[in-house]
Image (cartoon, rainbow, N blue to C red; front, top):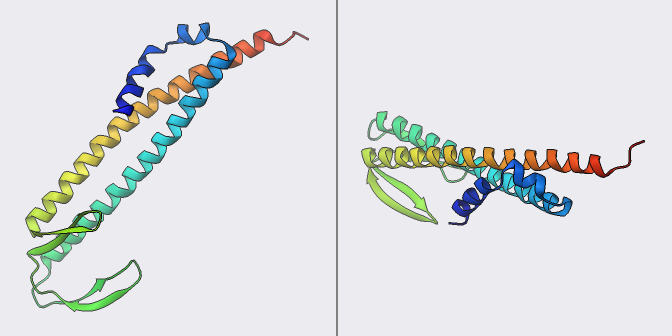
Amino acid sequence: MASSRGAGSQQVIRMADLEMMSLDQLKAVKEQADIEVNLLQDSLNNIRTATGRLENASAALHDLSLRPQGKKMLVPLTASLYVPGILDDADKVLVDIGTGYFVEKTMAQGKDYCQRKINLLKSNFDQLIEVASKKKTLADEAGVVLQAKIKQLSPSS
């Protein structure tokens, strides 16, 4: 909710509005826009990371589906700790749905889950890029107007 209000209020501030603001107001607008751009960049990085993990999981599911039953393999317990195991049933997988909850799904359902999550994250990424771009433009415009006002107020030498 807060992000949609922020995107809507951004459209209200135009260049003419910026030019009518005082120095303190311009500084506040620029600082707020810069903070929001940084938060959006962090969110974009988190989405990129999550998308990468889901793409890796989807690739792992594909590789797993190609292996025959009874195949010996190494099972990761952590990022750097593996134990030997034997593939029992490649058609049943456990899917991490968040906060420590796992659901047993078929291979096809697991692949579908990963693909739906990837599509959702990519859609969110595209929306955030658009909002971040508008916020960055607002910050840049506020900075330009602020610099122009400061230059007007400074004594000419």
